[in-house]
Image (cartoon, rainbow, N blue to C red):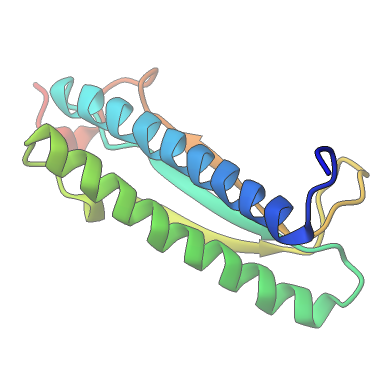
Length: 134
């Protein structure tokens, strides 16, 4: 019986893998955010984009936007937990994020619905005018 996995087991593995990836993203954002704060730079921002397969465009736009919004809430909770664990005074709501919906990715590879992310860490720019840096 060893080699075959049920659909439920595969789904459970995918869910655990997604949770690990989201945890790593939250860790990356918190570490970068605390570094930025210590250097008087803005907190990193993240853009989450839901993508569909393009087969049902009107349904895909709604579905992918909802997927990205759910991921955003989960990510915000993970960021809050990490900040709480570190005992800092930073707030998860201070990490800017946005949600977008796309019909399909531009790489030409056929996939099912999913969410991608882009991060702007602000670590390579001069301090912004409103950061209070002389």
